Length: 453
Image (cartoon, rainbow, N blue to C red; front, side):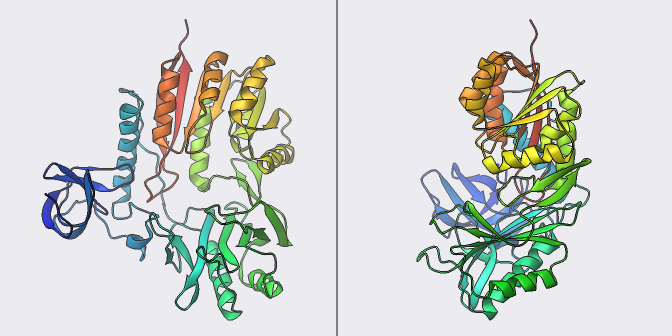
């Protein structure tokens, strides 16, 4: 029987979807953070549950040739980049295997062509959006990232996957808080002001937005803070004060106050210009986003005669890519601010054949279909929970020639592919793209074609 603090030799025979190494001892699964399949370790048990145990590495007996030294000093505590102990090439193989495992285990789909993951040449400093929680430490305000499965803030002076200007903005605001005795928000007492620092950066334009999430608009000496950011932050075009005074895990509230500059910044992608507002979604890795969208367009096979539905369209990025090659594009998005931005983006890029509807895809698409508006090609890019059941049912009835499924979660991708696969569609190809290097996450674009009678 395995007991807490017990130390034993363990062969790591596999890895979970989030990168934990796993072996077996006395017929029980033992999960070991930071281990790689193929390694042999001395493992010390730190937790025992009914069906499994959790252990840490005490020593290596046999180390993987793919093991590297993490580049982040707080890697072991932060947990954001859970694969930094692996070579980059090994992380790409791990992600491809995770996609294949999900398709087979959840989707029951074997023999699907899953291409090697498209990685980055330089997988550092790739994020155009940073989100730093702020709290009180022993010596005053601190900021960084939450430790895994907790709200303990791990301080981080700089993060190797964020744009350098994001770290600089966070450090300027922290120093201002310390100098002016401004308290960070306390989740337990609900006292304090500053909750998060959020940054958005246009990689192509160099434009920077800083969002200060506060419980109140009344920040002492906020004019001085604005002056500091203007003086020290290159590319600064917008400072937004976001008000969030509600308890809970939601980062940003619905009210934005522009303290300096513009209400939104701009970025360019694939020859198109996009407006990025405080609350709108924009893919966080511009270089890989272009790879992803180009693959989606390749799968869509547009000739200029098609009507395209772009569902969960956000600020209209994929919609506008498609509009350059399609006859008509209809984008659907539930966030009002994003739909308004999508319409402005279409106008900004002189694109007249794209229109946008605000509402849940599972409500809007059946309504459009009932009016006789059908798609030849459908592109879906849903959140992690995947597509709604009603939406999938409507798509099957509508019977577009091709469905291009862009997914950030292989498990819900597999679930939805199973539904489509059993209802007249066949998966032709899955292309994983490494949008989030060093993390366990992987984005996929999948081509599903209707089986013709």
